[in-house]
Length: 218
Image (cartoon, rainbow, N blue to C red; front, side, top):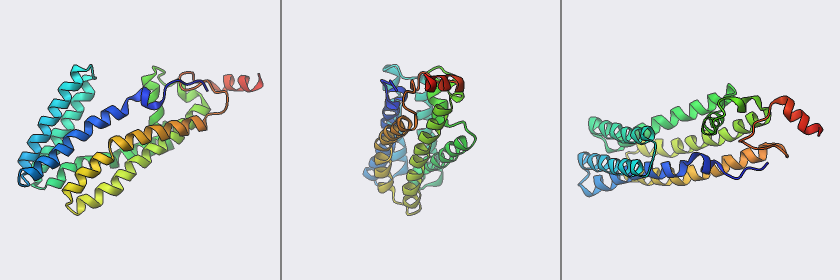
């Protein structure tokens, strides 16, 4: 399989994950430094999110993705302000991770693995990758790694949230965002490469069943 780029190259997930780490960490630092004031923490997080958004837009980032990230921070800040509990700043993260784990698992079961959907869209393949049985199977195997990523976060975040451990949540958010996404990208890419048969042309060149059969006979 001649495939020069990795999933990290194709998806750029590590950079987005790094951006997502900044506002929550700033929230915790400002909350603690401001005498455990949720208003101070929320304000600092929103300012940090605005700064990250402005920087990414200036660097040519996709406006839609940048605005979604900014909106997520604003919603998290509003939830914490509404409930009066600093740990609830991380509640949206918990909910989205639970929903993501479910969505990725369901996508595998119905044979529309989200990893394939995302990579196929990036490569402009639409649904051609689904006509390649080997590639479909590889994407299903790789997608389980992403399910595991979300479950790991839930296993850490939920007990800390229930224990009102705001500082620990901030640390966990930092550790389980960029490093975990980087590891997930690397591991899922390894799983895909191991799952594809020898001689497969790679992600950019999905094969139909007939083409794959002809290659085996050649």
